[in-house]
Amino acid sequence: MERRQVVVIGAGPSGAIAAALLKRQGHDVLIIERQLFPRFSIGESLLSHCLDFVEEAGMFDAVEAAGFQVKNGAAFAWGERYTHFDFGDTFSNGKPTTFQVQRATFDKLLADQAELQGVEIRYQEEITAAHFDGPQPQLRARREDGSEYTIEADFVLDASGYGRVLPRLLDLEAPSNFPIRQAVFTHIEDRIDDKHFDREKILVSIHPTHRDIWFWLIPFSDGRCSLGVVASAEHFQDKPEDLEACLRAFIDETPSLSGLLQNAVWDTPARTINGYSANVKTLHGPGFALLGNAAEFLDPVFSSGVTIAMRSASMAASLLHRQLQGETVDWHTEFSVPLKRGVDTFRAYVEGWYEGTFQDVIFHSDSPPEIRRMISAILAGYAWDERNPFVSEAKRRLRVISEVCASAAQ
Image 1 (tube, helix red, strand yellow):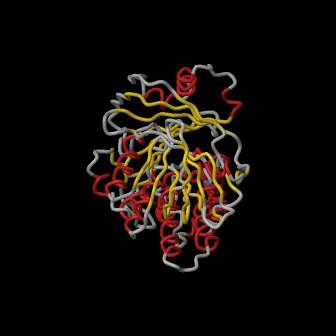
Image 2: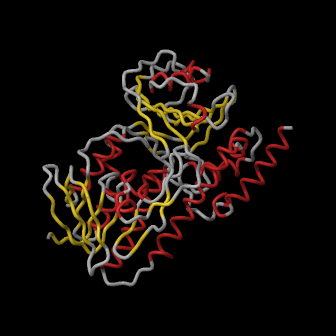
Image 3: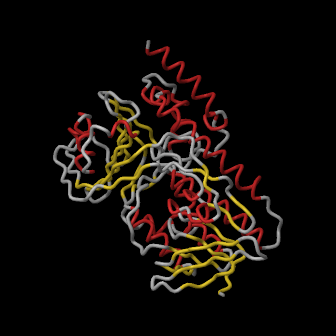
């Protein structure tokens, strides 16, 4: 039996941020990570709001010095239409730029920074059982050699991402209300020579005839990019089983994207993930809280996953510090409810994207500058800024403005 104050499951961005924040407050923190870093992950286009938490955790200088591709906004293409949003011109006046990162390098950098601040990380260890019905939470951990041991803690934060450790072990998983979609993706040497292409923005392209099919192109600083397609199952039925051939078939149907990538070198095996949208019955319980994707994942379209993960890490670390100091903390009203408000803002725009209403707004040529600044703030990750009417009344505002845009287009 090993005794620790806080155990964090997972050394990804939310785990590293939460652990560092707690360690900076003087707490004993142990991270258990199933994989060995560096390891591949998607979610490579960070939003500006992410850097607020990187800075809070004392990691900003290291991230800034790492040479990642600067990102100053988001661009959208649909046939001949093109528009972009600048993170330096938003309603929320957040950070004007962020980064586009290879997650293998980025995640290891954050984990290393947490270790430098005194956090202990044990790689290649897996949590196999969790018990929260006793006086203290207990976790069963399995080492790489198969041996096992038990850890008793005051509190457990689950930052296991898609691994969703506590939701699986404690039967907390709940069905998502989003349709099942599939993503196929890879990294390529893009060799883009179009002088109008902006490497400082993620490019989101829409299929010319199926508006619910979209592509991401995330440029990196070394001439490479992350490239992927997202679509529902029926759109894959006539596509090759080979993943690279499948992705290339979708791109061939989208001239604006295929022309941009005509010189690309496809040198990395493609991957796929499907049914990724997830939900849980609760975000917290006696002795634990769920962070980021371990709790809920919506959709990759606005790159909100890492932002939600880091926001949840910051909120949980602050509450847990107070609790460990002897204060009474209400995890429902101080964690679940405010976190969910921002998640639900992103949800409204994800739903609007696939319905086509948000696409109509994005590509509307005569949107007032102030409305574009409000939308840009959400695209930059500031989905919790309720001074923004497109946050505080997300569904209603989106419905109204999409109707206006539709009328103007007729």
